[in-house]
Each structure stands twice: as C-alpha cells, then as structure tokens.
Image (cartoon, rainbow, N blue to C red; front, top):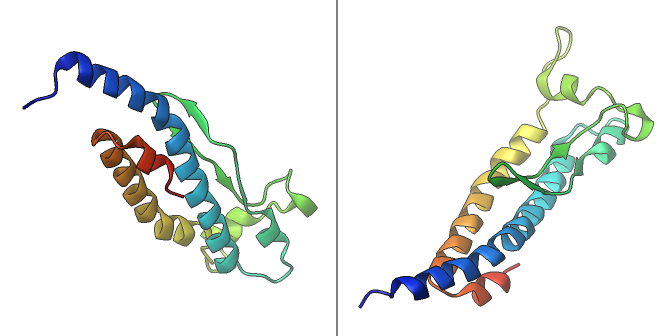
Length: 133
C-alpha cells in the first residue's frame, strides 16, 4: 500500500531538516580525509606547503553545499604561493600532483556516503543516517 500524500509530504519535510546538517557533516569528514591525503602526497622539502593545505567551512547556497580545500596562497604561513606550480608543473619543473590525487581518491567515498545518506532518509530512517560518522 502506498504512503498517503500528506504523510509522505510530512516525512519529506522532516527529512529536509536533516539533509543539510548530515550532508555538511559528511562533507567535513571527507574534506578532512582529503586534506590528510594531500598532505601525504605533497613533496615535503620544507613542509611549508604541506602545512598550508586546509579545509574551509562548508557553505550552503545555489541549491547545494560547497566545501573549499586550499593549498598555499599569500595568506598561508610563510607566504606559500607556489602550490599551483607544484601541482601543475612549470616549464622548468615536472608536475607533482598532490591535491588532484587526494580529491580523486576521496570523491567516490564521499559520493557513496551521500548516496547511503539519501537512501536512509528516503527509507524513513533518519536516525540511522545521523548516527553514522
């Protein structure tokens, strides 16, 4: 027997309240893992570039949640402004990717966890989704 529309809409509204915080928590978890992997993959001549790899705060907007990962830049410790040169290479230096491999490693895991989260919410088991870490 199908769920009556008013009940379904109430369940959908209840799930909607949980989606952003649960999605944000899942993204933070995988963002942290991606940062750790990038720190493992980065060349460590001085360790300054490794220490500059950071995860930002998730931001909601435009129908989704965005999480910024960064490396280097003028605001990083010791003014590490060469992260892009290391990642992409230059005319004098071969690329030594560290961010892209970390993102590529963790994206499928993030997608799997988000899909599992949505399945639990769709099945009306939001408590199981919120207890996952």
